[in-house]
Length: 178
Image (cartoon, rainbow, N blue to C red):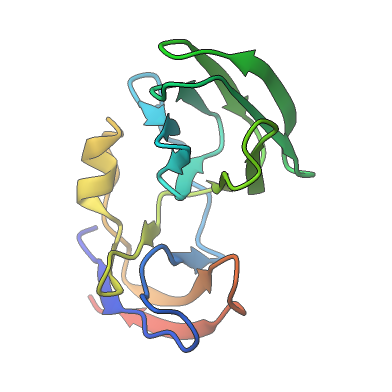
């Protein structure tokens, strides 16, 4: 398979169409070797980086504290509840994400800190950049995180959906030609 979907998300009510998750709805689940995958939710300048981190089911995410202060990363989300406790600069913790869904992150010490981990069943997703552009599957994203062996999309009709914490989800059909 060599198909891919390239597009641009346009938003109303946001300054920038960045940080919108675009994904295939109903695409088949894909078994992926995550043994060499590296996922990171950094803590720097009193922020989680990145703001939205999509990962595959079974991914382990590292939570390093690269800030100058202590942090406490936690989630009360149904998909994954956890509390890493307080830990200081230079320290890190790891969490396994075993089922699909949205995980909202917070920090007890800094109420302004928030981010999202979106746990996906397949690798057919992308997060938009500042101009709203995306590409599925995101070869750059997969390479950056050490995920190998993902083929392009098989020809066929798919539904593409969006997710953003402040916007209503949109759905559109799309065809990947032979």
